[in-house]
Amino acid sequence: MNYNYRYRLELSDTLRETLDRHRDLYRQVYNHFLYRLNHNDGTAKYDEINQLPSIKEWWDELTALYSRTLQNVVERLYDNLSRLKDQKDNGRAVGLLKWKALNEYRSFTYRQSSFELKSTSGQTVLRLSKIGEIPVHFHRDLPDGATIKQVTVKKEPTGEWFAVLGIETPDDPPEKPEVPEKCVGIDVGILKYAHDTDGCAIESIDLSDERDRLEREQRKLSRKEHSSNNWEKHRRRVAECHADLKRKRRDFLHKLSNYYAREYDLVAVEDLDAKGLVELDGNSRNRAGAAWGTFLRMLEYKCKREGTHFVAVDPAGTTKECAACGISTDKPLWIREHSCPSCGFTADRDWNAAWNILSRGIKQLGAGRSESTPVETALPTGTHSVPAKRVVEAGSPALKERA
Image (cartoon, rainbow, N blue to C red; front, side, top):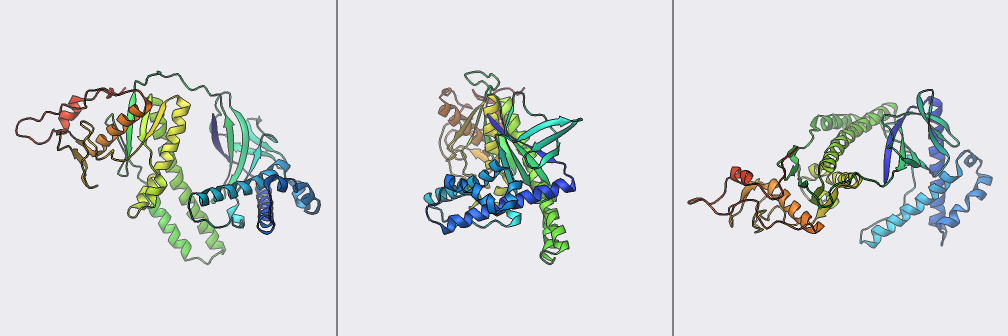
């Protein structure tokens, strides 16, 4: 199994200048081969890689760079071209690959060799070929049996440098029952970030203060003369605000996805088109801030790591469909309670959707589904709906008592 572990580099001024110089040279190589791609017909990736030795004969500065990483730069160019073609084949309007400015090329990668992570006098250092030893803020250990396959050195817009270690671990997740016992369905939202079938409603993380700070710094930046010293200082402040928002949001998503992956044997979610939802009119900022796509990707790989079944089901109709009888009922978004006119089943709208997601997940996995319903459907005399309290007390065949 493959993972990325990210560590901050503790740089001296000399090391910082060295990394910036190497990054700029890799950027120039990228632009050089992009020029060749645009002005020569029939260029191919491996033919261009074979041109590197002859280019070094007249471009003396390239001798200071590690040769395998230089090859990665050319591979990166053609990988970008391949992705551009894939988008075009899918009907998207795409342009051409762009020339990379200095602030747009932020990373370079060492693959397979010429790097080493070691401890020197109690300080963890990362040795990179042609650069030397770089102190690392090693805030967490690597998993047992992990092998480092590649190292990406990246400069963030804040000016900080990080090392992203691509590691490979043995494919031996913890043993869990072959037939899932603890199952959960999760319905994601905005006000309540997640509502599950165990009755847990997780509030969305409050980042309003961080957003206010970001907007203040953006207004200050807009009043500065572009590229002046004050402009650069405030550009970094804006970048720090963005990084703070991203860090807190990802911390919340990591903890939430880790909880579900470890506590359950089966996790069912909606197979959401997160990018398509953001592009819809109205409330797109909140949908983008919810980062549903990121949460689902985190949940998927963590379930794989923990040996938990992960099932993504068709989201169509999960909110409208009654979890008790399966009858669909149209309801506007502002109605937050599900009340089935057919069987009288009443419950929170999101809780009802979570049950539908779990039912579809169990069926999709092939584990079957109990014939009993979440609630007795007979209506008391003179009533038109079932109270939510009665629904909770009646329970469900898949409902498990929380540990």
